[in-house]
Structures are given as structure tokens and as C-alpha cells.
Image (tube, rainbow, N blue to C red; front, side, top):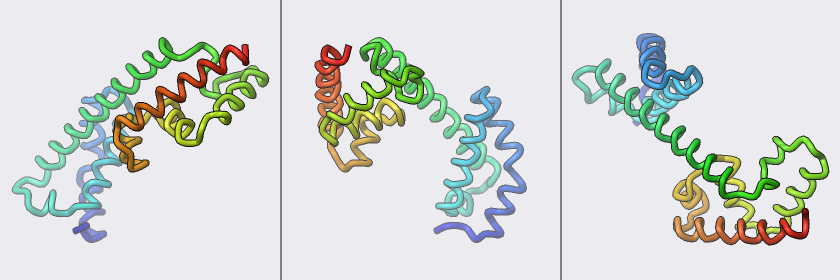
Length: 167
């Protein structure tokens, strides 16, 4: 059960600044620390039992903050590793369209993606540009993780085959 507005306001007033400082000390990243603070207060807004059943409100808040910060660091590391793998795995012409300065190349990429079946295009978009894992995409699309991975692989194979006609 969510807490009442007064409780949430009090929690934020009492803890937001110190939680941010703590999150920053763990992540060493301002924007990541801000995300952690936001995620913490969203978590508290959804479930008051986390705080109301605790002996020490402050201890619970800092435990949650630490866990959320470590999770954020792991996600960032995973995302960076995935981007490096993408850079190694994907053909050079397959770049996010926003990063492509050459209008002709951007149009070729858009055409290549448009030629893919919708389910493959969706998975590639969510994985490459939205940084979602196959598991997250499976949850979003209500598909098994293996199906998502297969659609991604098949889509990449079709894009690689199209590369020869584009370049």
C-alpha cells in the first residue's frame, strides 16, 4: 500500500539530500545518483510497508539506496559492455541514425531497418538504441528470452545481407 502524501513529503524532505550524496559517493556519477534517488522515492511511493515495518527508517533508506546504486552501476557496466560488443559485432554502416551525419547513409540505414519484419525491427531497436536486455525485451513483449535473441540474430543476419546491396 502506498504511503500518504504527507509521509512521502516528509521522507523526501528528511532524506533526499543525504541519499543523493550517498548515491553519488557509490556511483561517482551525478546523473546516475539522481536516477538512484528518483528510483528510491518511486519505490517508497509504491510500497509504504518497506518503511513502516522497519525499526530504523534511515537504515532501510540507505540500504535501499546502496542496493539501487550498485544495480545502476551493474546496468551501466552491462550496457557499456554491450555497446562495445555491438561496435565489434555490427557492421560499420549500422549506426544509430541520430549519430549519422551523412543524409544518404541515414536514409540507407532507415531503408534497411524498414525492410525487416516488424518483430525483428522492434527487437533490434529496443536492444541497440534503448539498451534493453533480451530478458527485459521478452518481458515487455511477453516473449521468451530465446525468442527475442533469435529475432535479434535473424534481424542482424538480414541487415548484413542487405549491406552488400547498400554499399
